[in-house]
Length: 302
Image (cartoon, rainbow, N blue to C red; front, side, top):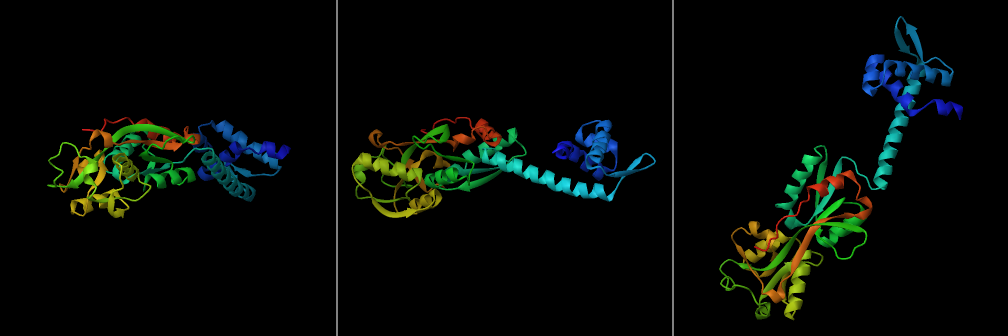
């Protein structure tokens, strides 16, 4: 026990610094200590091991084979401790230099680039990895730890999820340019019972809004197709294969083929979009930086 009390991690760091620099002054500068501290640490290790680690040649300290063996063991021990510290921090809700951000496809055009750029102003060394998916998929990934945060619709009443609201986004009736709906001030969904519709598959927040609006209308719409991403949905509507309901945030990517028409007030549905992460990880510095970058944006109702 007494031997291990004498051989500390700090002394091993000083040993490695000297072995790599072969100079007391440079080793001291590397560790921000005095040369006297390094010299004492080396002699303390020799006393603890009861063997010579260095031999004197003039004013130089030359390492012996014992010093090289101890340095190899110290290098392995310090790496093992470092890896263990990182693993413990990760288990306790702290991340490294990379953050995995889940996002809805529709947020990848404007919201995600802005937030990542603002986050890098706060943490220039932080690397972001983007994972796209539906609201349901992102929630599963968040809980599984395969994403650190998710930009998606705020889930209702999830006690383990911390949410920071960004904006509310209304749903619109989406139809090909020049359709009979274009001249309407607002669309009455009850008058669309014979219309063909295309929508996203279950699990997407836009599909949830689509279903909620038609529940308000009192009927189940005729579905011509279900798709797996919002950009394919926009292209199919623009190609005249059907109508749908879309959030206002996609207005800038409609490509002049699709137009958004307001719904009558009784059918209106709004999405609450925000940053979401596990409450247990709310002190994670990476998530703190991302949350700081998340300033609310104006409503997309206009």
